[in-house]
Length: 142
Image (tube, rainbow, N blue to C red; front, side):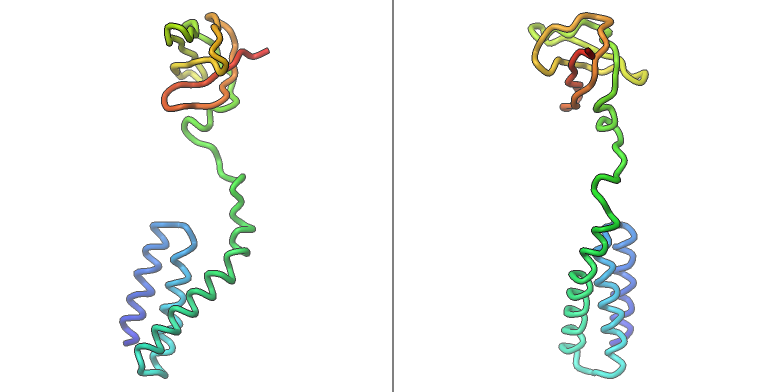
């Protein structure tokens, strides 16, 4: 039975490498502990209980410790989220009545609309408040 626990431990490790959530890792450790217990205990139910209990205890015991090192604020914004707060320039008048308007920011052209549905003329500097789908929601830079 120890071979099955070793294979399960390896499978959980591969899943953890793919997932990177630091969750499945503890099931790998639990399977390894169950493998060690299989050298001394022949009953598969007891080995399975050892696997489940050790995995669960390790998961909940280390969760607060892991959360200290994985701050949600430390992630780098990418793609469209990285544009929020950037300054750009209106290239085509932002007209809420005709649903027209474009801006240029970081060398990219984006469809845009004003945050308060006001008209913003060409060459006005703007700041991007947020991105909704493929449109930048902007306001004039004061």
